[in-house]
Amino acid sequence: MARYVRASENKIAFNPIAFHCQQAIEKSLKGFLTHHGRKFEKKHDLVYILELVSQIDAELSHMLMPAIELIPYAAVFRYPDTPVEPPDLKVADIDRFIALAVHAYDEILARIQDKGPLL
Image 1 (cartoon, helix red, strand yellow):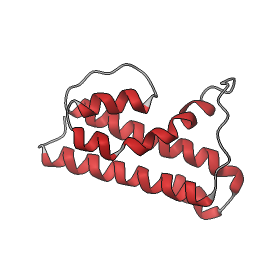
Image 2 (spheres, rainbow, N blue to C red; image 1 turned 180 degrees about the vertical axis):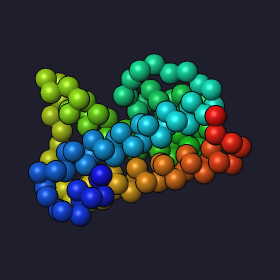
Image 3 (cartoon, one colour; image 1 turned 135 degrees about the vertical axis):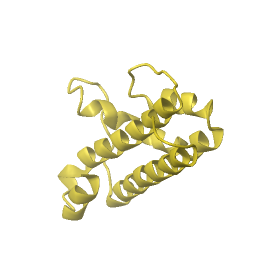
């Protein structure tokens, strides 16, 4: 979704792109935790999720720490009355977010596949 909307270069869509990138990273990390049998609270806080991931794979957690920049975008669209105001995004920001989401997914998938079959 993020790549599709990015191709349109519609600046109005930048915040939704950031949201989808945040979601891709969050869901990938939660999949990693689930694969390892780790329970977690229903939160969208990437700092919290990365802390849990660090207990299993500190290198992965450290590598994906830049994703915390996307935390505000988890709430902005889910909770319209949130006091968080996302920053004005540029094309370079969106490209970086998409690259980070792809990197997170690829790294997590590689680690899960290296550990044996999925649950």
